[in-house]
Length: 120
Image 1 (cartoon, helix red, strand yellow):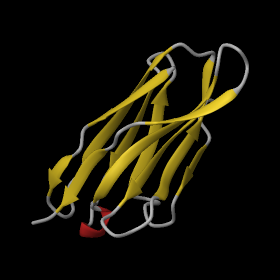
Image 2 (cartoon, rainbow, N blue to C red):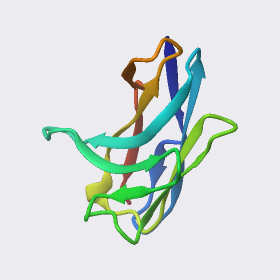
Image 3 (cartoon, one colour):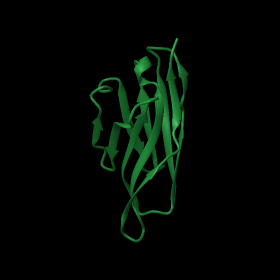
């Protein structure tokens, strides 16, 4: 079993910055991919950014140039640096991990999410 715990959400003014963290714990062989998703009120969950174990990243068009995803493999932790925040970035941000288990199969895990509110 793997647990993902997010932190770093909160209230920020437009144009401000926040850094989210996602720490993974438990028993596993490796975390292949870590990602951040978000769900705004009344909308479907959408991909924000992903990062592979090798460091390859992908971003949603809406956050390119403003958000940066990174990870520390030694700490099993992923980060999302968010700059130039806009009110439309307001959402619950959830961490996702594609984990290779010690027995071989790959399983996806989700954190409970952290709320980011961008408002003046």
